[in-house]
Image (tube, helix red, strand yellow):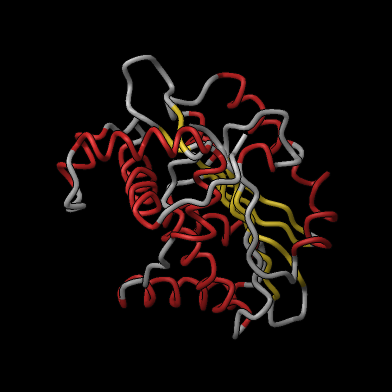
Length: 253
């Protein structure tokens, strides 16, 4: 339970650093890691005190005795809402995506599956696409091959992919034309567990058909890059991207 005490700017910088290191390495972060990799101008003892305060407020937790700290769902939520800086795709990335999307629009058939393949290729996450006449998924093996994913989580993700068609109409209706929003961990209504995330973006084809595309990956996924990439794809597909929606659901610690 997060207390009402407001996080300080210094604590916010430390929390952002913990999230970034956890997303890069997928491991718990110690005060020494922060001292070695960031120029806070603070002693290790001061950083430990601030980490203790962040833990008391519910933004980080200790997964094991004598381990460092990892972000909680609330910590990821605060990072996504308040601290995350959007990244800019390189010109090469933009040109590659633009070329791939132009090819998709020219082919037109099986555009959902082709979009999902583009997403997985650029993010290394499992992905899906939902349109009224087509529901496709790609890259589930990327999740199942992750050694940190408990068998129960793998089973639940696989079941979601098996039943994508059952969710399609509702998700297209709810998120096909909304702006970005995030569901992290326990916020995910599709799940009985709280250990994994999904990014979903609504989009509209030039024909006017609405749909959604989505990613599923770990809590330690690269949120800024993945969100930016999905927003760019929806903009390319729709010729403007004004109706893009993004939902983040936290996958696994």
